[in-house]
Length: 82
Image 1: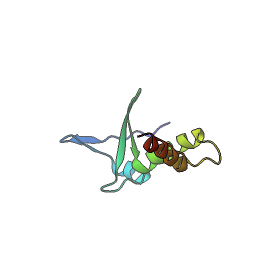
Image 2: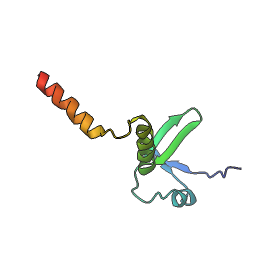
Image 3: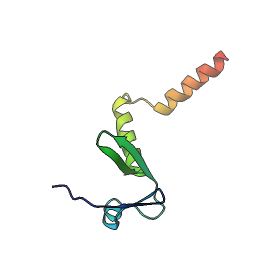
């Protein structure tokens, strides 16, 4: 069964319980990302959100293809047209 913890809202700030902050590596000043989901609000560390984005794009990227090189080539083509 999923453990449930309670937090509080003070002045528009969400206070996360210490056990959750510790379990997820959230320290004072850590950047977090809030997402609206069909079940409510999801909170992730910025590092976790970045890992998920990288995983998503790695599935789209073709093997051996450099996304940076492709972007630079596209920008050069656009500049040449202008």
